Length: 379
Image (cartoon, rainbow, N blue to C red):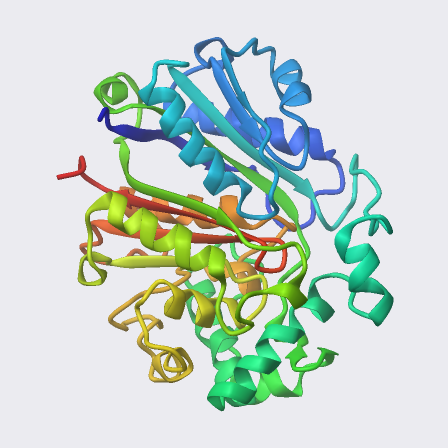
C-alpha cells in the first residue's frame, strides 16, 4: 500500500499559560506553525481533522474547504485516531494533504465551553453518584487494584514522575526543569489516594498540528519526512468500573499490538517510546499492555532506570504530561515528540533512534490509539 509521511509538525508558539489566545486561536497558531514547517499554506490543504473543537469551525477559521473531514473525539488520544484515519483517506485518494490540529485553553479557559458531567450519561448515572468524578478520583480505581494485585509500592509509582522530570530538564520548552526525588513526590500534596500532586498531569494552554501526505510527494515539502509504519485504535468502556481487567487496558492491548503488527516490528526494533501519561500509572500499564514488560514487572523496569536517560528503552523523552505540558488532551504532544525524535531534532535526542512507538489513551482507559513512526520508508 502507498506509504504515508508526516511532512509538517509544530506546536503552538507558546506553551503553558496563554491568556491572550482563545482555544480556536491556539488551533490556528499550531496549524500555521505546521504549515510554515512544511513550507505550504492553507490553500494546499484539502483534508482536516480535529477534536475538542469542531472541524467545521477549524476549516472555516483557516479558510479551507476540504474534501475530507474527521471530527472523531474519544478523548486525549483522538489525534492518534486522526492519524490512522488520515492514512486510510490518503491511501484511498480521498484527499492529498491532511492537517490535524489540537488547541486547548486548559488553564486559562479562554473560548472554551463549560465542562460538566452529563447526568444522563453512563458515568453520570452509574459512577458519579458514588463519588468518582473527573480523572484524579476515577483513575484511582485501577491503580489501587494494580497495587493490590502486584505489590507496586508508592515509591515505585513516584519513580515514574522522577524519571520524567529528568527528561524534562533537557527540554527548554518543558513546564518544569528542577530535579525531583521520590521523597519529593511522596511529600507533595495528596490529590486523590494514591496520587500525590507530582503524580498528576499539568494543567496548561497550548496545542500542536501535523501535516500528512503520501510518501512519494514528501520531497515537495520543506522538511525531511517522517514515515508512518503502523497504526492501531480501539475503545473499551466509558465506565472505568466496567473495565474487563482493572490492571490492564483492553483498548491498549488491541491498538498497540495492531500498530506494531501493521509496522512489521518486534519489541527489539523499538528505539523510542511515548506513552500518554496523564497520571503516573499510565506508563506502567502501557509498558505491560504493549508487551515490553510482563504483568507486574513494569514498576521494577522503571525503578531500575530502563526508561530514564541512558536507559535501554527511552520513554516520554519530552518530560510527558507530568513535567512537559498537558492541556487536557495530551495525545498531540506525544505525537510531536515522536516526530522530533525521528527527525533527529528532539531536545533530548535518542542517539540513533530509527523507530518510535506512540501510544495514547482517551478518557479513563476508554479508548486508545497507537502510531509507529520510522525515520525511513517502511521496509
